[in-house]
Length: 196
Image 1 (cartoon, rainbow, N blue to C red):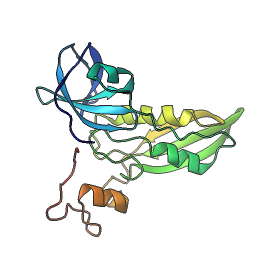
Image 2 (tube, rainbow, N blue to C red):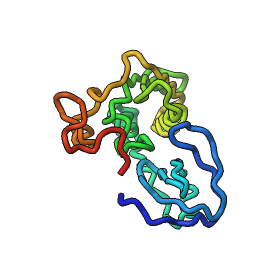
Image 3 (cartoon, one colour):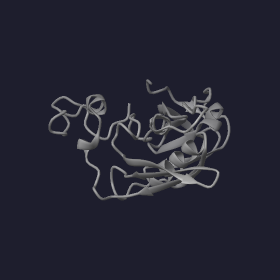
């Protein structure tokens, strides 16, 4: 997505500050630019340079159609592929890469639960102090809870082993301008983190 021209909000909106993860409020008339539209939400920058996550339910306030939630839920018995497909619809609000290709999801396990299944996820963040951890964790819980047979979703955010760019998929490394072998931004690459 190309960064939009400034758009005045047509009404007040509750947003989440990036990178702190703190709730915030943008009043009607605040001029914003849409920086990223992925995973059913928007990353916007206000006129003062602050970045925020705007939920799809408030897209109309910025004159936009609600972003598709990109759910890939299916009917039938729960399968491991369904879990990974759903996780790939969740994006870091600062980086245009899904959490699976970014290497944040360490494991996904399915266990029996009363009248269904329980999914246990172990994931990390790009940095231990990431303020968006609870936001991404809630996204995982919400999206996986929509899958068939799922009665419970447990997400454990861990930092051992610590995340590093080497955990990213080859496609993510290419998209973000990282050298595939070394893991550092390649010469002329865009560096990390990136917002396009």
